[in-house]
Image (cartoon, rainbow, N blue to C red; front, top):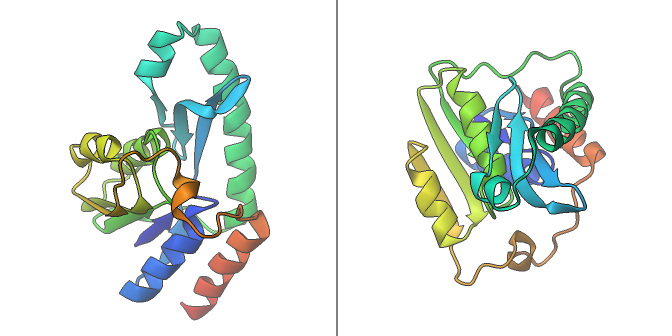
Length: 188
């Protein structure tokens, strides 16, 4: 089963699912952005309650637990909203005993993907494969130990940002995610 991380990972995951003839679903993850610098990931949360912290950022900035909890609760509310928006009344994907291919539009620090991996492990898939178009070499090395397989097309150095490796990195909307998922549900 191919699982796209909303929102940007869903269009990429759709192409992977199409190529493999595999089912597509979403797996919800939210970055925990540093207040005032939201693009800097201090961690991430995922469906099922998993929370992964970027210890390097948390320790370097001496972030108090109250800040982590405040951001976690705000992002958990958004995660639940998106779950309703993308899944409606469909149940979460059943990955028990299956190969779960987790796809995003790219990796930077890997915090979001680590949260997805941690949450997926609790669902007992047979294997976890991470597939992304671009990621920095150091993040790839760190993630290899956490998954059964890692597929990355580009590992440029210096990396800088995911968006640099796309011709068009326009944000994917909720409507686009729903349309992609609906199209796959209709094919099933």
